[in-house]
Amino acid sequence: MNNGKDKESRIRGENVPVMEYQPLYTVPAVAKIMRVTNNFVYEKINSGELPALRLGSLKIRGSDLEKYIEGQEPVSRGEGQ
Image (cartoon, rainbow, N blue to C red; front, side, top):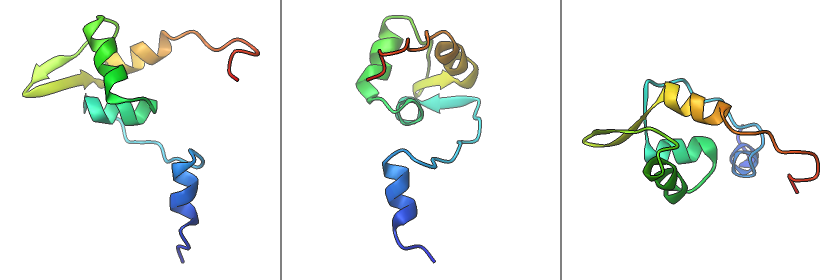
């Protein structure tokens, strides 16, 4: 029985299911995965930090997304507030 709690907890960022790996992602999909705006993703693409392919619309390789995420420095104690 779904009482709406599942949807609410997912909106709050709790118990979010892991998405299946895909070889290519759209900008909105990357934004959703990273929990940022589409504009943030476009900024990273335009700055060259996140490689993208133009296959109709812009696409990001799953491997490039992983490299980008792995290349980010962890937040130091006290910075994550």
